[in-house]
Amino acid sequence: MTEINIRNPGIGNRTTQFLTGLPNAAGYLKIVEDLRKKKVLNEYSAFCFNLRGFGDVSRMYGQKEGDRIIKEYAIALENFLEPGEWAGHLGEDSFTALVKKTHRDSFIDFLAGVSVNVHAGDRKERVRIDAAAGVWDITGTVEDSREVIRRPSIALSHARHVLHQSVSFVTDEMVSSQSRSKNVLVGFRDALEHEEFYVYYQPKVDSRTGLLVGAEGLVRWKHNGEIVSPGIFIPPLEQSGEIRLLDYFVLQKTCTDILRWQAQGLEPVTVSVNFSRKDLEDPQLAENINNIIEECGVDKRLIEVEVTETVDTEEHGSLTEFIQKLYDMGIRTAIDDFGSGYSSLSTLREFAAHTLKIDRSFINTDDFSWKDEVILTGIVKIAEKLSMNVLIEGVEREDQLVFANNAGCYVIQGFYYDRPLPVEDFEKRLANKQYGK
Image (cartoon, rainbow, N blue to C red):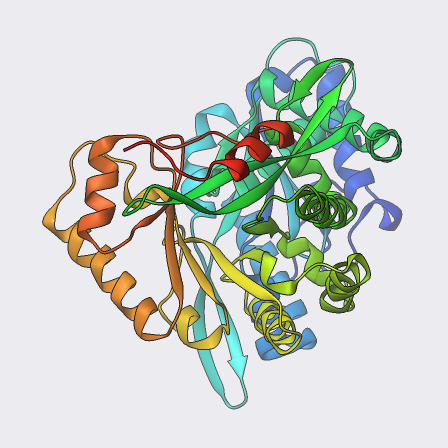
């Protein structure tokens, strides 16, 4: 195999990534610092990027072949760069690059798909590997060379976890948001201990009768007298894994509220609680959920665990096993956000779930087509044939309600009927379950 020609002979082994020969983080930062001192950084766009799906490729063909593919990718990367441009390898499938702004768009096109050889036994195949990337068009004075990695890294995280797109350019708001995220992680456990988190309940209504038939428990954080948006605290908690503690808290609080309602003579409805895919990393997740419900003494029919499907092969297997465990324990489950992203009908066959929750994307339009109705009607009928309950979320308007009803979906969650309610207001709904028509 061709050796990689690293265009910086002054960098030694301690600043070189052993697998590819590209500069590692230390070597890359040395290059950045040299360019910063020469006051030419503003000529560059800084990239951080990950190879998408490389984990699946490595598992399919083995670690040795995965390493060889990374080497080949690094060669293609190095050969694409123009003189005066630089790439770094942070390890595994994570890379950085400094590209002239005039060459930026071409480099983005390059990241959309690089063909590499894959050896599968005696066969050789060509596989295209694309990357998710964060970009910073460097402007102003760079006081700290580490910003050239940090800022595009923030954009990369935003591209992958928020936008679900291939490329994102960093903004000041993203940088501020990351700072807020750090504050969230620092203060989370204290906030949990000091009972700053609350559970609000959003009603689910049968549109045929106007009756309250269920609810979803949604977490809210009240800090220093102000409500913190879930969009601020949920993502960093998910990325850090701390979300599991919060999900357990919501389940515990929901169980406690249900017991109190019953003690007050109120007839509760089934309440769904969300568990993040990140929670699946806990091998005892199903057992812990079951223990919380049983220790509280709540009828399991009054709790439903909501999970979101996934396209990740390994995650999908863990999710299937998790749902089956809950099913065997007598705990209801719901597939959340069905129809968004890369939803597959095979999900309905593989998951032993009780409820299918259709994503708001089906009704988030001002112009419903006959195709929309055919697809939604088909999904509803399939779910019903599989003995699954069906509801649709995000309904805000009369025409959306009519569209859902025409497709055979009658259980509704959305602002059309009610917003998420503080527990005191929801208790009033339990006392009078009838909504006006």
